[in-house]
Image (cartoon, rainbow, N blue to C red; front, side, top):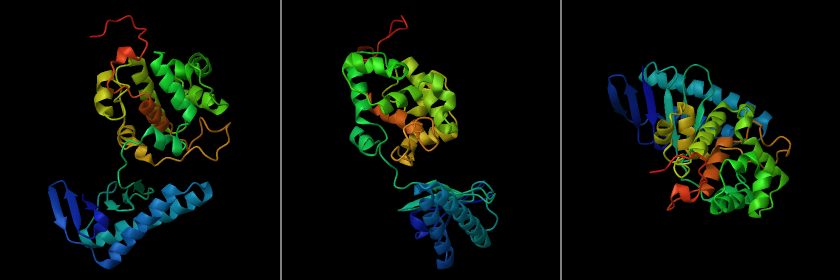
Length: 287
């Protein structure tokens, strides 16, 4: 079966990928292109919406448009792959969809570089007091795992005043709360993050080289989790602002995998030996 791939809004043509090879194609006619671009705009709007009721309506409309996109593209090129029919990328975003009736999947564009700590704090993904706690715990060689299991004690030890919300957020990322994270991909990423914390040798690069690190630690990662880490969550996250403090930690809609990436960024040990920073409780000599 075929998959149609269109870059740059399809204005320069695209590719048809089949089991027999790849075929370049010229731009579709304006009617087809208008429907594809309308679909991309609707998918982008649905992904950006923070209002649950509106988001559901936008997803329904996006699904209808993606089904129409598949129908009219098939009139041009013939039957498409049911699960990967169209991949459409434009300057403002894009989407991929099949012909099964499932909602289209947004493709954020352009790809985002790993954000700075300032970016993460400004966007509300991680609070400044958590960053300060991580930096001071690192400087004082406190075991990284203690930040999650007893954040209040660590904060007192290093002289950082943590807000009640930050204490709850850190505790909710502790290993014993893993099962309560509603998003299955985030749950997988947070579990991987804790495997990295326990090992202590990949705190620098688990989110920049996730496949290599997962292989080294013998931790299985699904394609969905791997893709989300590679894209830094695509930074298609819904920020924490506007949620009740009591609901913020385990609620769906919080990209906890991205919070872990943010904390990993704050803890980056570039230029340092890992045993200079992490308290080693294994008793095993490091080479």
